[in-house]
Length: 324
Image 1 (tube, rainbow, N blue to C red):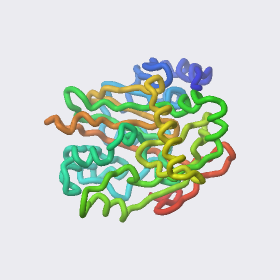
Image 2: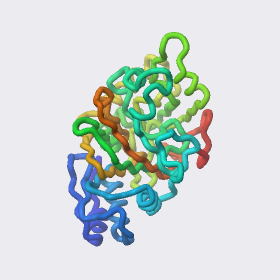
Image 3: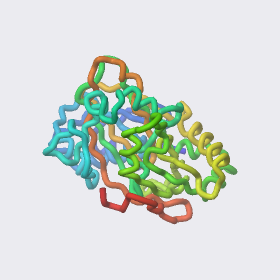
Image 4: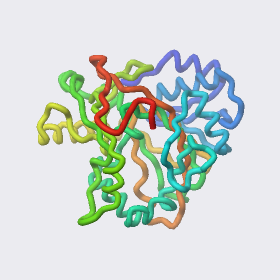
């Protein structure tokens, strides 16, 4: 289970920043830092330590532009350049993806955004995911900043998958340690009757990998319950009914309220999370509101997950380490 780290405390003390936890297992707010400034190495080390300790950290009142956002992200690793982005994303900054849902997705696949969202999230657990979880090398981290948000609603929730694993019984931990699961793009989507443009989109861009059900974090050594609601297809070596029952149980474990934190966005808010140790739930309560929600995302390149046995994930289709 997540515990306080002397290394984290020392890094924060040396940097002179304030890290205030906001939930028992996950989430902290960092104050006293201007992310647009030329931050010294001690501050960067303190932020990195806080992300590893608390899995997601939050900053408020920031004045980052696209240039500053990318520059800040590069202090922590290699930024991902996506080959395909929506029209709302800034053309001169290939590292930035703009997630302006109501501006971009409505009508894109022949359906309104709320219908598209319902088909992706037809169960309570389906919306939970890590970013690009079907890839062989999912991003190590995501840095998301808010430009425009509704006056109410639009919160994001994260879950600590290290704490969720630690909360399992010893017998169950031993059982899942040796399992692997297929993660595939779009498995949670319920197609429309007849022709469905989004199904065609998924089939043309199919991505799938075989990941350990428990991965070992490459920096902290923690064991991570590596599940998510939107990408996991089936546990390898089990029948469909067995796999479905176990996955449902593990997903319910992963999103127990005590392992989660919920964040209310404001313009200028920034969230920085460890995509290897968390999954998150984007808001589903704003599609009916007549208010835009414009967010900008930069991701950091990740490694190929490895299981408790040290064996790395295997690519099935449409994914190669380091190639987006």
